Amino acid sequence: MIDSTSFGTFPAALRWLRLGTVAPFRFGSWFFVSGPSGRSDPACRAAGGFGDPGPLRTLATDRCNERMARSDSFAGLQKIRAAALGALISMATCAAWAGVPEASPPEQKLPKVAVAKDGKGFTAGGKRFVPWGVNYFRPGTGWAPQIWRRFDREATRQDFLRLKKLGVNCVRVFLTYGSFLRRPDRVEESGLRKLDQFLKIAEEAGIYVHPTGPDHWEGLPNWAQGDRVTDETALRALERFWTVLAARYRGRHVIFAYDLLNEPMAGWDSPGMRARWAAWLAQRYGTPAKAARRWNLRLSPAEAAAIPPRNARPSRRLLDFQHFREEVALEWTRRQTAAIKRADPDALVTVGLIQWSVPINLPAPWQYSAFRPARLARLLDFLEIHFYPLAGGVYAYQGRQAEQENLAYLEAVVREAGSCGKPAVLAEYGWYGGGKPSFARIPPATEGQQARWCEQAVRTSRGWVCGWLHWGVYDHPEARDVTQLIGLYTAHGKLKAWGRRFGELGAEFAANPPPCAPPKVSRPKLDWDACAVDPQVGARYLQAYARAFMQHPASSAPAAGTRAPKAQETE
Image (cartoon, rainbow, N blue to C red; front, side, top):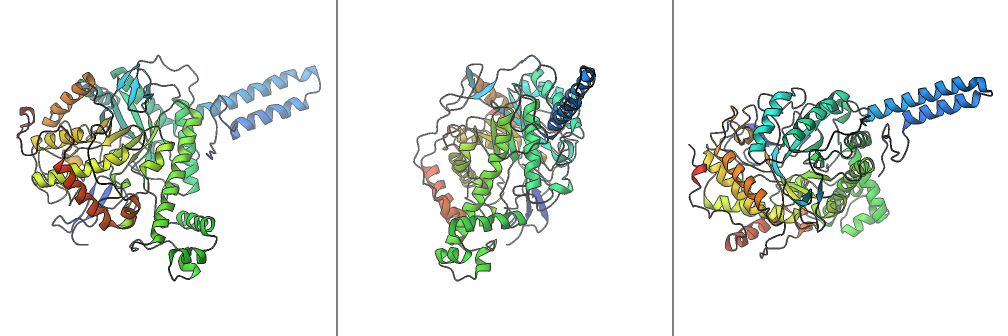
């Protein structure tokens, strides 16, 4: 869940939710207006020879060869030696720029996390490993949080000691363009040094770190303002970024996995999308006219070659375009994953998928992210999915029916991510409690209500996913969404009811890791293609799924309407 600093760089899928107000507001990654309506081209490869030598290393070698060729006597040896030294210095400079440590990595204090051999979950040091943690940012750093510009080493150290006492073993943290990638041809050493410190603090606390690819929390440079999924400058910059990062931290066990980006979406209409769509049509049909005939549509060649309107009605043409968007998402994922694996073959790679990567509960087809879990799975080591309770609008603890509908929606989403033959992690979840959010006309909620919902979210998703990363550590008053009251702690550091229950669940899962196997329950089958082009089909599917869920629940969460444990009864 992220808050953008500029409209248009993030999904707006809930723009039409009716909350009784006409004021615009943001919820996480999303902007609401309520009311009606591998090719890798890194600048430098790391020492060890991954692919091309890179321009700096090549330049150093060429200069050395040139000078050696000019030496025709033993007297030229000193010049040759000087040239070789210059080459080595240049190569060392290159390696330093690429982030490759000159010294050996520090002594490993954590065992390496790997995907279990049977593909069901994770292992670390020969034992089952259940990722149990948080998305890390601190209050008092603005909104969106300026994690790295206001990096406080001692505050982070104290936070991690607190989190460890709650059983946290993993933190997901956003890297940013503003601190790490201000230019497309350079990764900022100042940002990397802060990340070095962050990793050291985490390692000392016994907590793994899950870095997430460059995002807009600290602003976007001009070159990254456009469609970063198709723009070649942006894609090459990301390849370079991951090459640098993965080489710098190669072999560092404190890295749990790399998350390519928080909640990516394939765009709809941009120069890059238009060019790729034209190429896709030519490869598949030959000409736009032939494509129109296959679609059984009366379109001129120019009309057939154009991007379908965002409000297009269901059609074979729209389905083709959604499949094309999925292929764009695949290529984006493939290139970055390949860059990481070339630099560190043992690194785990995933991508944090928005819940609209599963095409149900969509206001319109263009809000489908096109990052289809089943297609991405072959490129990734495991899947990640995010979820917030938004069935029928923003969940406001309205009662049993709304609770069950949202739990059914959760299960429907994680079921798709958890059925791809790879482990899955619920990498963002949570909801508000302990007051009234100021960003919209929704009622207050108690800490007990928050604790109940969050525990049920964990238990409902169990089996489909085998790891959980809660959204946020503290309440964050600066936020413009439910992050205001979503924390395990208040903004002043008081442990909330959900924080206490979170710690108990962490201890429970550490002692008895939950099975990473989907429950055997009967559920409707999702017609993916039909839902991707027609939101009404998706809405009917979710209704049918909710009926099946309520008739045959699979979770071991407390029955709806029962009293929450005393630890949750706050306020």
